[in-house]
Image (cartoon, rainbow, N blue to C red; front, top):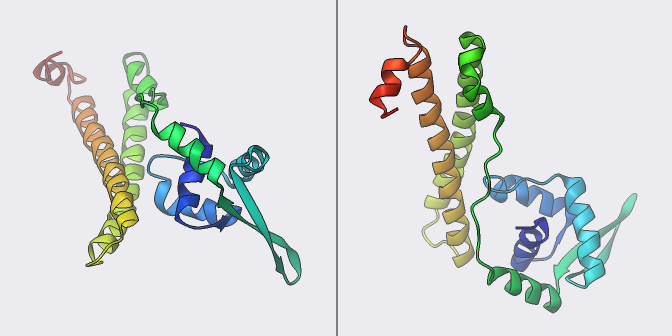
Length: 189
């Protein structure tokens, strides 16, 4: 998936400035796609060049004019073309897994500390997502778009929960006196 398709999808909802798109990434897309404000602005420029988006300049007092982007018909066609493509799982590239892989050769307390830190990071993110989930669930009449947004939020929650459970599992094994050998055997290793 390209960043452009995420931006096009967000613009289907309503026209927005690059800054507003960046905020939407933080608020509703961050559980599965990350992008900096600079990346978003760069892609918007490319998309405008391809005719996938158009912008309207909105004057601002004491500031440069604001560009409000909207998806064009050509942009909708590109989004539809991409939507019809099959998806593939994203390959995992995770530093922590490499550290666990090398755990037999390095000091255990360092790995345990990092696993505890990562567990906390995932717990905090899960709690933020669960706050959004509670907001969604408090709306008795969510829009169709809100329902789809909720489905992606649920995946983000499950992702964070899985990391927490995995960190817990690894921590239990690493804290055993035998370095987790017996626990490893119990897991089927």
